[in-house]
Length: 290
Image 1 (cartoon, rainbow, N blue to C red):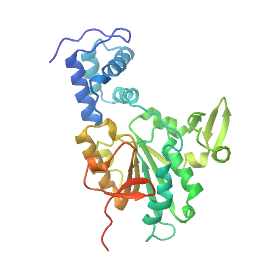
Image 2 (cartoon, helix red, strand yellow):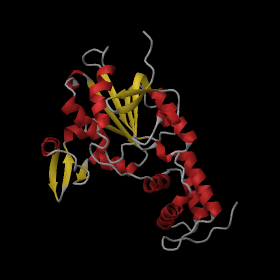
Image 3 (cartoon, rainbow, N blue to C red):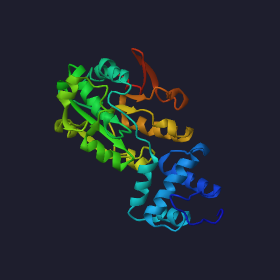
Image 4 (cartoon, one colour):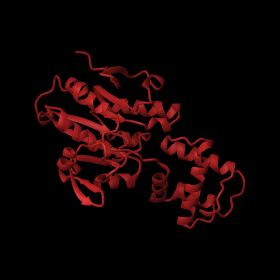
C-alpha cells in the first residue's frame, strides 16, 4: 500500500517513493512511456499541479480520480501536461526528400492514376510534421496530382491536436521555410503569428490515438508510410517492440516506417528490412511476392 499520502499543493509537494512508483507503473501501462528516477521532479510537479486544480485532498484521492473517473477527462488533462511537444517545420527534412525521391515512386509503381496513397504522422504534435509532409510533396513530387494522397495525423495529447487543427504557428516554428513557401501556404495574422491556409488544414485527418492501445491502432490500415520519429525513445524495450508490431500490421505490404535520427529498428524488431535512400535509412515491410 505504501506510505500514507499527505495533503499536497503545487508549492509543497513530494510523492513518497511508493506513490511515485505506483503512478509511473500506471502511466506506463496506459501509454508505454516510462519515467525513470531522473524525471522525479518533473513528474512530482505535474501531479501536484493537477491535485491542486482538481481539488483532490492527496495523491491517493487524485490517483482514484485518474483510475475511476467515468469521463476520463482528468486522465487526458494529465497526459497533456506529461507529454513533450517540441517541433518545427521541415524537421529532419532529409526523410521528406527520401519520401519523394524513393519511397513514393516505389510505392506507386504498380498503381493506377487516382489510386490512394496513405501517409501517417504519429505523433503529430502541433501539426508541423504532417503539414511539412503535405507541403514537401506538393512542392517536390511531380506526380502528386496523379494520386489521392491522404495524410493522417495522430497524437495522444488532445490539446496539441486542437492546436494542429487550428494551424497557427509562431516565427520559431516556420523559421526554416523560405519566404516563397510562407507566402504560398500561410496567412500572416500579425505579431509573428501565421496560419496555414484552409485548404491544407482541411486536407489533414487528425485523430487522438494511443499507439500502445490495440483498439486505437485497429482503426488504421493500408498505410503506405508511417513517420514515427522521436517517440519510441520514451518507451522501454517491450513497449517499443509492441508498438512497431502494431504499426507493422497497419502498413501495406512494401510500406515504410521512418524513425528519428537517434532511433534504430535493428534494436527493436526484426520484422522490417532496412532500406537506404540517399543518406537516409528507413524500414520496410516486405512486399507481397509476385
